[in-house]
Image (cartoon, rainbow, N blue to C red; front, side):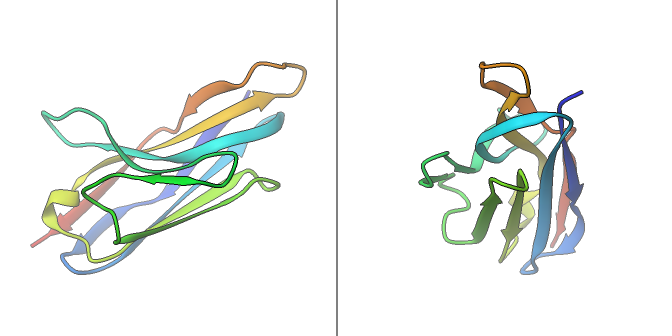
Amino acid sequence: QVRLVETGGGLVQAGGSLGLSCAASGSVFRLGAMGWYRQSPGKQRELVALRHSLGNTEYGDSVKGRLIISVDNIEKTGWLQLNGLKPEDTAVYYCYGVLTPVGSEVPTVYWGQGTQVTVSS
């Protein structure tokens, strides 16, 4: 079964850094775009960062300049490092990936299980 598995997250003090990773598991033929979105209580899910298949990256306005994203298309794994964390960065972070399963020609959107990031002031 194809899925995205997230690791990382947790509790960090304001001003600190945190790393998240996301790995595609199962029989995956191709990884297209990969990135992260986040959602805090009472708010809509918003973009954190998204690396497109051509290598260009989109960043959410609220985190621009404070993060590093990298994606290994062969290993089908991505990493996100968040720096200069603020209490308003507290949210559940969801990995997003466009995967083409083995035996399929259809790229499909998958979401990770989500991981909690809590920033204390």
